[in-house]
Image 1 (cartoon, rainbow, N blue to C red):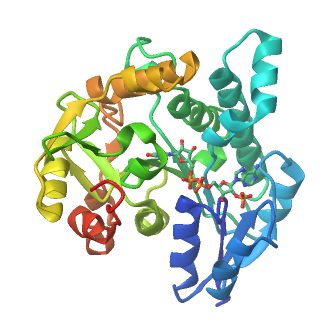
Image 2 (image 1 turned 60 degrees about the vertical axis):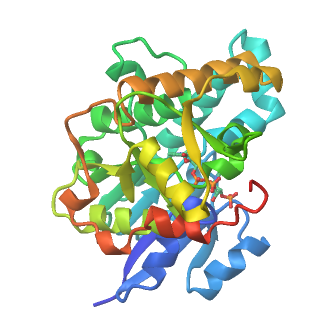
Length: 332
Ligand SMILES: NC(=O)c1ccc[n+]([C@@H]2O[C@H](COP(=O)([O-])OP(=O)(O)OC[C@H]3O[C@@H](n4cnc5c(N)ncnc54)[C@H](OP(=O)(O)O)[C@@H]3O)[C@@H](O)[C@H]2O)c1
């Protein structure tokens, strides 16, 4: 039997890189990783692991059509935050009298639709499309949350797939990725703060909901593999390695590092003082309000957990070991 082919979007990124590396190590699979620039240095380790790197752009439908040729499985991910960095997003927002995050959401939705349209052309070989998505915060909050657009764009194109492409939807499953353990390195507000008395404060969302912590470079591959192997498509999986309270995370952090620590509900005062624009303050504060009040998955009863869909739980990251491996010297 010839090897099956998995096409991985975002192969040079955190989520896609994990999927590409795992499948490259599995017998019976070929991996085609998609990137805008297969010649860049960060492609070398993937290529050495046996991944074929092919040029493709989520804004160029024809390139996706070519990339999906012969695919048995496609893993899809889009990146909301890159659009916030682009001057063209801010220019378009000014021209349209809208907020930059609204323009960013439109751009992310269009990329999602481009993926869906291309995948729908390859149903003769395609057995499973796994879409990295997030819950619909506007829907699950009953319209109270309207600015958590890095969640809602993904939810909207996921719904577009379900509503308009029944044959593709019969072969599709959805991964709602949890809260990255590494966020403290990319989000200034999440860096543990040392107090004058030597204790630490971790800023987190409040509420009673547990946080789905995930380590994308390791865990995404195993989460996706379960969604590929489980017989039923149309499965929505909450992607985490440990579902724990923020207080529990803080307790583990303090134990590993031998320091006293407490959590505080994250406000936006620091962000305001640091000059974060109003639209981003709304985006982040509504995101915090959403996960605090309705939970990461919004309380959607259809959402499954890793152990329910056969994820190899022992392969997922252990939060304690992850904290032990991280370099916290700059914080301590
Ligand atoms: N931080 C969190 O806690 C969290 C939680 C859940 C979900 N998320 C979501 O995760 C997403 C980002 O995923 P990630 O962390 O895997 O991203 P990442 O590590 O930043 O990598 C982004 C990937 O997207 C690819 N890409 C970007 N634009 C592209 C385009 N036009 N055409 C083709 N490929 C393109 C890049 O490929 P090239 O540059 O090589 O072309 C790269 O591989 C965001 O949308 C975010 O909302 C984040």
